[in-house]
Length: 117
Image (cartoon, rainbow, N blue to C red; front, side, top):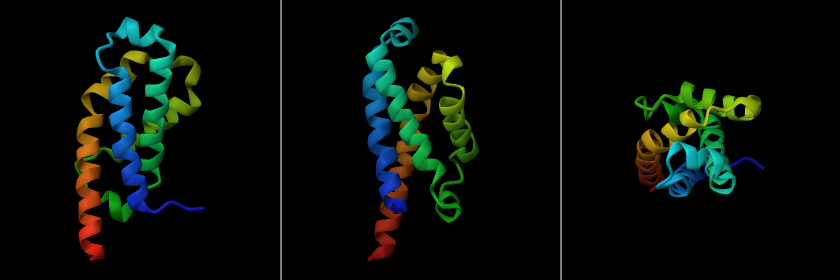
């Protein structure tokens, strides 16, 4: 069953927020060694990347400020290089990038909902 673009955008918003919540207040050492919160945040980051990867190009072009290729790269990194993940990169991505991605996804949701009316 295929998911609609708006559903994928909702997945981005909700999973970005959860990843940020799970990583909140953790320094690199605590994040790297705290398996449950780290793994939960990493799982949610994976959902964000997977959902973004499967957005159609016409949706992606509505938000050119988003580095879509980098997001696909992060997804591939998490999935295919799981044994050598640099948790400082993951934590920095969660802290520095997910907020703006979630905001852009929320704007796209509003745009899509407005055009459906």
